[in-house]
Image: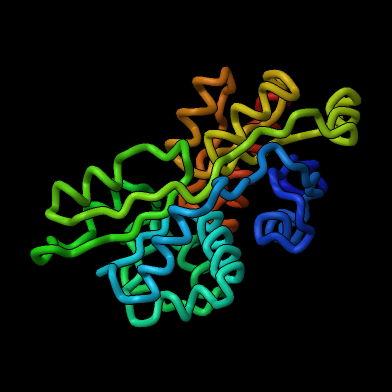
Length: 261
């Protein structure tokens, strides 16, 4: 029996078939899915819709996508416009910040022309992998309202014009999940997975600093946000995928188990 077997883990997802929930369950742990944050399409979506229509008309040289959440938003807006994201993209090359985003794009029927090499998935990694622009090249960059300017700034420094458009806002849950709160109060939770800086902040706002839990972050930027929120991070995923999260979870739980011996 390994440290992860039967461990009860807060997972910031709500769909039972979500890849992170499934990966935790398949590893032998017990996922406790809950909504720490929700995604809200920008309101009004006029600017985003204009950019998507322009994408469909071939106005962009690239589409840059920085999260699986962004993929879901774009798919939804394409449907609202009476088409599909694949139809709007056409032959425009698509870049993904990492393997999880690339997988979401593949699921939406898109080929991915550029994914940064290496285990981490960050805007800086994507900038480093990006080719220098031909004169007048335009990158469509749909993003979260709270996204750092790293990618847009880096692309401009490499000579690209950037159609930088807010696609969605991330909103923290307003109230704690009664089921999760009850599990925490009873001491029946072993770990929590954090998949973004916003989930770290929301966790603390809703449930406090959760002492005694193994805290796992999907990447360095999420770990930094968690530390700023007052959380001690015990492991960071070696790659920003569901499998990477499970690897880090196993390591964090094993370390926690050793400390309690």
